[in-house]
Length: 245
Length: 356
Ligand SMILES: Cc1ncc(C[n+]2csc(CCOP(=O)(O)OP(=O)(O)O)c2C)c(N)n1
Ligand code: SF4
Image 1 (cartoon, rainbow over the protein chains, first blue to last red):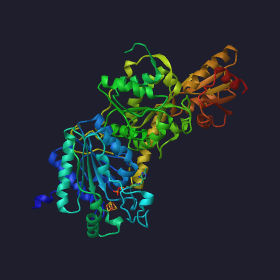
Image 2 (cartoon, helix red, strand yellow; image 1 turned 180 degrees about the vertical axis):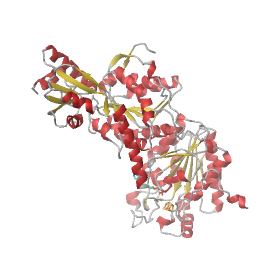
Image 3 (cartoon, rainbow over the protein chains, first blue to last red; image 1 turned 90 degrees about the vertical axis):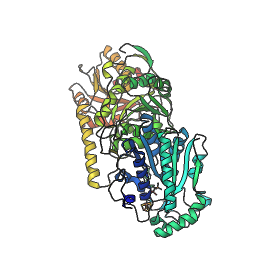
C-alpha cells in the first residue's frame, strides 16, 4: 500500500501553507497525479491565481506563471495561441474567477481556448480574510456580510458551471468536489478528462471543485465537510454539465 | 524589402513588427489606430502568425504577458483609454520582467477626450501609469519611417532588458501616408529565453521549472528585486538615450525641446525664423525615457541661449523633465495645445519670438 502515497513527480517536496482541512492541497495532488499519468510534465505550464493558491508554483515541479487577480484565462489564451503544443491550466478561486475575472473566463471559454481551468469554489475570499464572494450562499456570514448574504442587495450566488455551459461554443464543463474519498476519485477522472480534451485540442475544459475553507467559515474541518455536503451540494449540483460532442 | 512603399502610419507599424520577426499580435479596437488590427487580421494569417482580438485591453495586456512569459515575441497597439486599461498588465509585465512591445497612438484626454492627435500620455508612459516602481523604455517617432524603425528596434531592446517598451506616437503619425522602407538590418532573431521563460521543460531540455512571477513577499527579496529593476533602468540611461539636435550649431537665442509630430512643426518654424535671421535651436528627444538629460542641459546652457521652451501637444508634461535638466540655469517656458488642433508653424514662431 505504501505505493499509493508516493509523491507524484509533478508535486514538489515543499510543505504547503494551506490550513488544516483546506481542500487546495488535495486538488493540487490530483492535478499532479493526472499530469504524471499523462506524461505531460515537460510541456506543462500552470497559471497561479491571486488567492490562497498564489504560491501554487512552489508545490509543483513544472513551469508556472503567476497571474494578476482574475486574469489567468487571458494569460492562458496568450500562451496557447503562441505555443499550442504546451499544456496549460489555470487554477483559480471563486473571487478570482467569478468576480474580478468574470470577463476573462467567459470570453476565453466562448472563444473555445484550448486550455483547462480548475475552479476552486470555496464560497469566500480565502486569502484576504473570508470576505463575501459572488458564490457565497444566501444567509452565509462572512467578514463583509456579517448578517449573512442578503440576496436583496447581492443577488443569488453565481453558478459558474451552469453559466459557462450556456455558451454555444463546445466545451467540457463539470462540477465535482473533494470532501470525501468517493468524490475525490470522480474529481480526478474529471481532471484527466479535461486535460485529455486539451491534448486532443478539442475544446476549453473547466472543472469546478466545490471546496472548503474551514478557517474562514469558522468551522472545524469535520464541520466544514458536513456543511458542504448538506448546504453547498444542493445548490452547487455535482455532475457533468457539458461535453464537446 | 529595402524598397520604398507608400503606406499609412498605422499599417506600416503593423508591417514593421512582422518584418522585425514578431508574428504575434493581440489587440482591442480603438480610434485612431484600429487600422493596425484591421491590417494584421489580414496579414498575420498570410505569414502564419497569430492575430487575436481580445475582449478588452485588460485581457489583451495579459494575453501579451502570458505569450511573452513563454518566450515568444508579442506586441499590441492601442490608444490612450486602452493603454490606461493595459496599465495594470504593464506593471505585472515589468515586475515579471517580460519583453512586450506596446504602441500607443495617443488621442486627446482625459476620459474619452477626443480622437484627434495629442501628446497627453507623456506622464503615463514615462512616469508610470501602472502601480509600483517600474519604467518603460519609451520611444517617440516623428515620421512614419521613424515609427517603422523604432518598432523594429523595439523587439531586441525589449529582450535585452526583459522589459516592456512603449512606442509613443500620435494620431497624425498613425494616419499619415508616407513612403517607407523596412530596413533589412533591423530584422532580428528572437533571443534564447531558456533561462527564464515558461516555454516547457521539454522545449529547453531541462528538469528545472521556470517561474514567471512578480510576487516577492519577503521585504528583502522585494527590495533586491526592485534594485535589479532599477539597475536596468540605469543601464537604459547609459545606453539607450536617443535624440536629434536641430540647428544647434547656430548661435540660437531660444532652445525648443519638442518631440513627435509637434517637433516637425517646430522644425518648419525654425527654418522660417532662420530665413528671417532669427536663430532657434531644437533638441528632439527620440527616447522620452530615458530622457536626453545631458543633451538638453548642454544645449540650454550654450552662451547664446537665453531661454528654453518645451513645446508639446499637452498641457505641460515634458516641460517638467526639461526643467529638471536645465537645473535653473535658464528660464524654462512651456507652450502647448491639446484637443487635436496641432499648433501651426506661425503660432510657434509667434510664441518663440515673444520670448525674446
Ligand atoms: C486587483 C486586485 N484586487 C484585489 C486584490 C486582493 N485579493 C487578493 S486574493 C483576493 C481574493 C481571493 O479569493 P478567491 O479567488 O476566492 O481565492 P481563495 O483565496 O479563496 O482561494 C483578493 C480580493 C488583489 N490582489 N488584486
Ligand atoms: S484560508 Fe481557506 S482557502 Fe485559504 S488556505 Fe486556509 S482554508 Fe484554504
